[in-house]
Image (cartoon, rainbow, N blue to C red):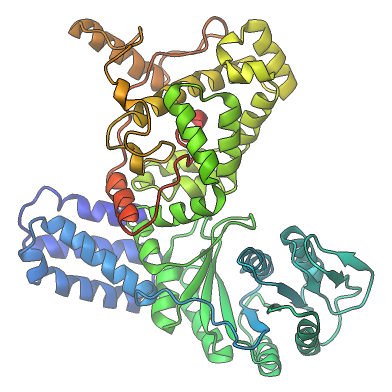
Length: 547
C-alpha cells in the first residue's frame, strides 16, 4: 500500500497548479491502492470522498505547493481514519488491580501479545499478572508460561502443580492438565491479584478458527465475571477482507474497548488497520511488529499514517532511543568519533545498544524514504549482526583499538575463531573504516550534528580545526584526477570491484551521503517539540551491514 500511495503523488510534483482532472487521477490511484490493500469498500469510499472534497477546495488551489498540500490532506485524513487523531492511553482502574481481557480469533497472537503487554507494563513500573484462561487449545497454558518466564512476569494457571519462579517475579503455579472452568480461573486470578498486590491482570482467553456463538458466550461470561477495565481485541494485520466482519462480530459479542494489531512485520497489505478503526469506531491502542518481547509499541495514528505514506516515524525512533541510551556514554562516543579514536570496542557497545531498540528491519523501516529499499530490507539477515559481534569478539584488545595492525595471519585467526571466512573479516574491516571516516566527517560539519544520529551537536567535533592539518589522501585539486577517484569509489561501493583478501583492508574515503528526503526536516521538527536526538544512535551502523 505504501508503494502504491507514493506512486499516486509522483505525477503531481512537477505541476505548479492542479486541475480537477489531476485531482481525480490521484484519487483513482489512491482508491486502487486502498482496495488492493484489502481496505473495506465503505471505508475507501468515505476516505476518498473526504480527500477529494478538500483537495478541490481553496486550501489546495491557494497553496504555494499544491502537491505537498494534497499529501498533507491525505495524511490528515489517514490519521483521522486510524484513530480520529487521538492517542488514547490504557484505562487504568482507580483502585487496583486494573483488569485487561484479551479477545480474538485463534492464531491472532493473543498469547504472545499477553507476554509483550506484561513486559511493557513491567517496564513502565507496574506489577502485572498473566492469567491462562485459554483452556481449549492444547499447550496454550504452557505457552503462556513460557512467554511469562521470558518476560519475567508471573502466570496464574488453572491447575495447581510444581511451584516455579519467574525471573523478576513471584512464584507461579505450573499447570497440570488444561482442564477446568475458564470463568473460575479468571475470577480466582483477581482474588489472587488483590492478595499479592498485583496492580494489573492480563487475561488470555480462548480463540477459535472462526467466529462462533460458543466462543462469544465464553468471552461474555469471563467479561461479566471480572468486569474488565479494558477488553482488547487482538487482530492479525494479515487477515485481509475478513477484518471488518470479524471486528464487527467481536464488537457485538463482547463490546471491546480497544484494538491491538499483531504481525505488522509480516507480509501484510495493511488494510486491517484502516478498516477496523473506521468501521468499529474503537481506538487502536497497541501494535506488535515482531517476535521479540520489545517488538511492541503504543499506537499513534499520526505516526502510522506517516509510515503508510513513507514519511517515516522518527518520533517513535527517538522515544525508543531515549529509553535505552545512556547520555554520558553517548557523549563519550561522540567525542571519540570527532577525534578519530572510535574503535571496534566502541562500535560493539553501540551495536549492543541499538539491538535493545528492536530488530534492524523495524528500525530502518522508521526512516523516511525506506519504502523504495523494501527488497533490501526484506533480504537483510539479522544473523549478520551476530556474525559481526562474533568477529569483533574474536579480536584481541589491541586489534579492536587499532584495526590497522590486523595482517593476513591475524585475519585468518579471527575468521577461525568466529566461524566465518577471511573475506567476511575483510569486508567488516573495510566497512568499519569507511563508516568511521564518514561519521567523523559528518560530526564536524557545521549545523548537521544536532539532529543526526551518531554525532554530537553543532560544533561538538573539531570544527575549529576546519581547514587545518589536512591529512593526506583527501580529494585531489586536479579536476580530472578527482573525477577518476570519485568514479572508482562509486564503482567500489556499488560492488563492481572485489575486495582483496590481502593487503590493506581499508578503502578510499567515501563521499558524503545524502539524507533521505524529509529526514532532516523531521528530525528538526522532533527537536522543536522538545525531543533531543540521542548523540550516538548507531551512527553509521547501518553501513556496516551493507553488501
